[in-house]
Image 1 (cartoon, rainbow, N blue to C red):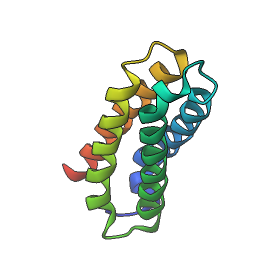
Image 2: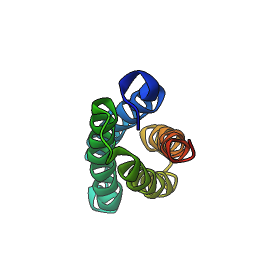
Image 3: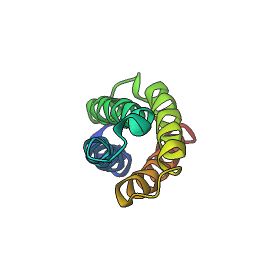
Length: 111
């Protein structure tokens, strides 16, 4: 990994993904059957945490960022798969950004 300027596009996607995941988790708590949304909420929170950490390490130019990008992509894939099962607008928005973030994180390892 190089640092903020070189990795800005991926950093921005990670930060956007984290924000949308947090929004999704919060919105899921307002659903009529919150228990049914428990896995979605959990994966939203995990994905957001990993996206924030990945963005932070990339902006620092950390040598650990490349490996964390792989984990972040996997978390994004899991979150997207779960959110895709729900018809709510917030879950569909979350699934879409998670797919984009996963692609960006994987591309970081292909450089």
